[in-house]
Amino acid sequence: MLSLSELLFLKQHMPPSQLDREVDLRSLQAAWENEKQSLLSAVQSLKDLLAQTHRVRGVDKVNSL
Image (cartoon, rainbow, N blue to C red):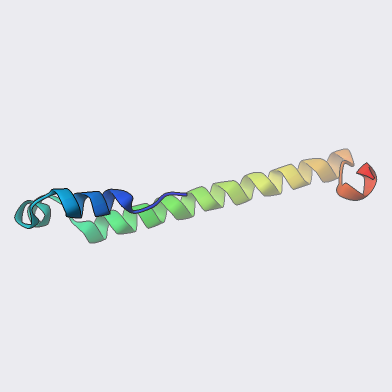
């Protein structure tokens, strides 16, 4: 999944004065969290769709044994 490693990189490699002026870290963290939640939601939707497809086609685990 996504991480906040880019934020750590920015903190380590940019002078504090430039970092404060150019990058709002709280906004970036919120954006990454929103992106993470969107991706998790998309993954769950795909899992649900796959499970529904298997049920419709009769491919559930009980029938495959």
